[in-house]
Image (cartoon, rainbow, N blue to C red; front, side):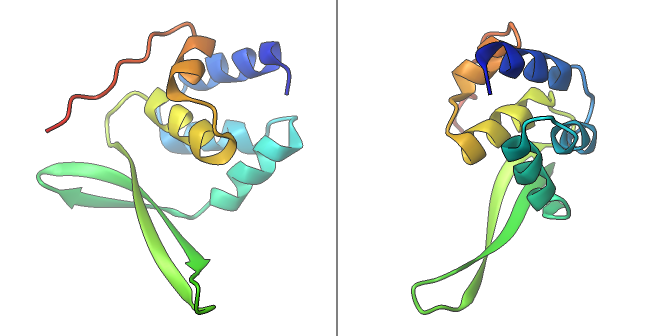
Length: 116
């Protein structure tokens, strides 16, 4: 994907208000790799309340060294956060594009979340 196409896509995604909306845009993307990655994630998100926050998790399985399926859970974002948190997570986990670069493509400045 060319840089200009990436910027156009990220700007369109940044205007969405929820993870499901952004995921649908990604699944419809003309870039086959992006669309395939997004389609593969469909149905792999779960909500859970942890420490008083409603969190969105990516739940997936992979084979461990013994060849057995093992379930993994990764915190993606909290409910109500800007959809750019999901967009940056998606491009980092699927294509190793840094959060800073994804936010820059949307014309935004990435600020690291404060550690607790």
